Length: 625
Image (cartoon, one colour):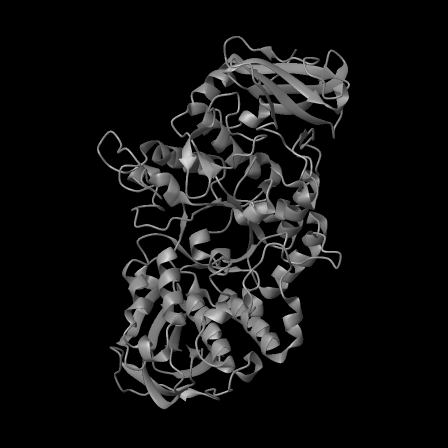
């Protein structure tokens, strides 16, 4: 049996945790051997006594199609002539405890649709990509000085058909991608689309790390989706879960009769943690990260639950965990894995996005590995999200006393490369929809939500908004039904939808909001401490001296006439954005015409101007050129 990838060198690298394209060696591959077409099956199961492949082709009969050991490598392989694409299969593993275990292929490229759990043979190399222009343009961008505005999506519940059926990858490639483009987002981030048995896990409890879920189509269909995104200028980020996996019996758990992939149980979620101390697991996971870049042309990964990987005591009580060799609570093997992951991805894909969902104060998450960092290039700013949502949910009477919750994030805003998330986690069962979190009457709820998003877009950091946030849904997100699109039949929701679209395009247009996003060069406070009136005033700056915006956020339902704000330059200023404009559902208390800066020092600036401030509103002023 010939296999260009099943070589002693690759087997050695796999066992060293250094074979980062191990999916080329392991799994089910269509090949020609001695003039015969068929499928080569290769599996890592070092503690198995015997291994067989079963499927429709042999009536799922045990012992008919054995795999052979490849020396003493723990790897098993066989070639089955005559098999074609689409064949269902599993591995029947006989253990030394005389058990027979049926397992899906850990490296399977496609799966039977749930509730079926078999793997399916698929050739991933036949799709004709049309995204060359996108790939070239991506290499010309500095992502830190570019706009990143992410629309987070769960494909199964963005829309549903009247029959309650899912939209396919190919249908979404037009409806969803066209919508995202029109709304002004730069990227789509997908909740995990790797194969998973339970819809209610939203994709976060996986069985098939190399298989795009068959719920919405086949691998070529998903390639078509990514291709269409790229042709429309939209990047694609995948949610990726290397921290834990589900216990389902056909999956990775107890794979060859022993804990092959897992280290210990993740009690909080009823899942199993990967054993990062095992080199083959490192090869498996880093290969999987590269796989999505190599075969599916994705632009980035958002790594889920990084904190659960970093800390030995995560979700545990005293006495339930053991310290590392230095007496600390850091998971040293997980740290090394994350560093190796990021080094490897950036070696092959220097322009990738590697985003950490990390909720603690772990230092240097987005610093290079050679400087002691974890090596990501962006980190979700969970502190900002928690503080601001808690503030916005508070009553107006309590906002003055909580003013620092709005400003504290600037104490650390430039210690990492941050992304500001209002994600699916904030609107799931029990947490309320964003609109429902807001205080006040019906009008005030909408005004507060416009204010929240306005402050988010003006604050340093890239942006992410979960689907439905642009509709001002009253109901929490629910994975088994589509978004409440019917809300757009109502004027207030229509106006809010128009607001989000306008805010997105305003963000894209204004370089001051993203060119200097990672340093104090792009931000300066004018009035951070006005808790009495719950008002913030600050500057955002771009590369050019004249490229700046003056922003004001009023967090109370009180309006002001002739409110004075400091500005750095003399000249004529115009109101370029106002969340209270009538077309957004506001009171239309605008600053019409031109505002001339007076030589009256204010807020530490040599000039100032007087403006009208609507209640619960965001205002942005810009000097006329």
